[in-house]
Amino acid sequence: GRRAETSHNQDNLTCDESLNLGMMNEENVACFKALRGDIVHFIKDPYQIPDASKREDDPTRRFDESVQYVPDGILLLKRNDNLMTTGQNKSVYVVEDMFPYSDIGNALPDSKLVSNLTIEDRRPGIILPGFVDLHVHATQENIIASYGASLLPWLQEYVLPGEKLNVESTKFAQLMMKNFLQSCLQAGT
Image (cartoon, rainbow, N blue to C red; front, side):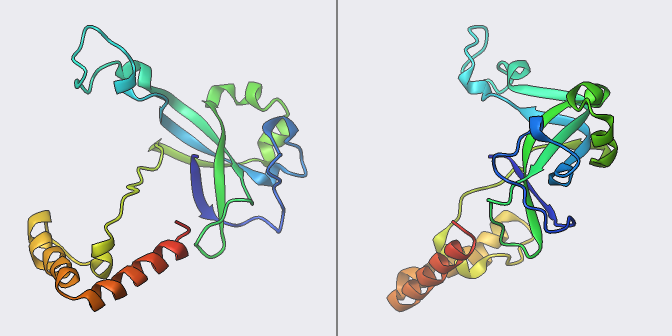
């Protein structure tokens, strides 16, 4: 799911998983926050939308149907206390709704709620989903965050020698895999 991690600044309010926008009231408005700015949202994979006029590998294929752009929009987020984070004092938020800022009166008809809702103004920025690279190389556990000016020197100086140690020494490889698996478990993987 879509989620954002931010500092936890509310009191010890519990935001129940079943809480939804229709139930937003003065007592639970602190469970919500909003980001204001231009929003770019990916709604479909462009390669999954048939378009006979373009080749299958053409990246511009049906782009208009795969991306949604909301200028001066509101991204409404709900705190989810059931999702865990590895950060200290952090809350995890999930996307509850998205709409143009000009529609805030229709989306949130109670003006008292709107005035109590925390809205972080990110203009002139663009609000995008997190681009998270979810792959990991177990053999590179010992070089995470190692310096490299560019890809090829980094590979030659850090990656390849480290991977060579894993191949040449069974003991070293076992230790690295143990550390790798412990790191994955600590991160919630």
